[in-house]
Image 1 (cartoon, rainbow, N blue to C red):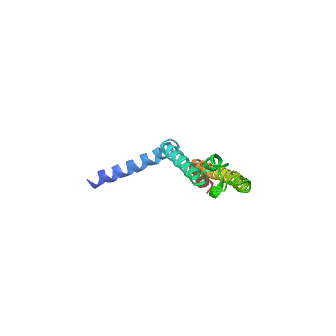
Image 2 (tube, rainbow, N blue to C red):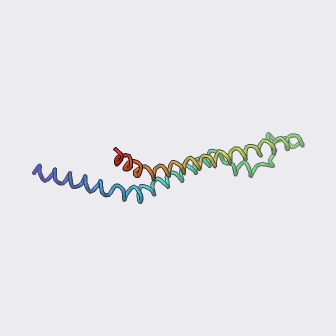
Length: 115
């Protein structure tokens, strides 16, 4: 009885080892891509440059004189620029992490073959 259990465990182990690369680059890559997409969406929800762009000509604190409007446009313009830059940098970081995810098994196999 125990021999059959051990045989089944070893068979499952080796089948999982063979299936792992296929899963990593299909189902796992899809899950990682969706996770990265959600990270970019969260970054967009955090920085919201388009909301600042939408309200760029709305006076801050209800000041409708020329100085208040100019200051509001100036502050929001720079907010849009910096928030867009940060969102772009965040997108590059997330895409880099996704590429690291894809390259990780190749790197591990390469390092194992070097030793």
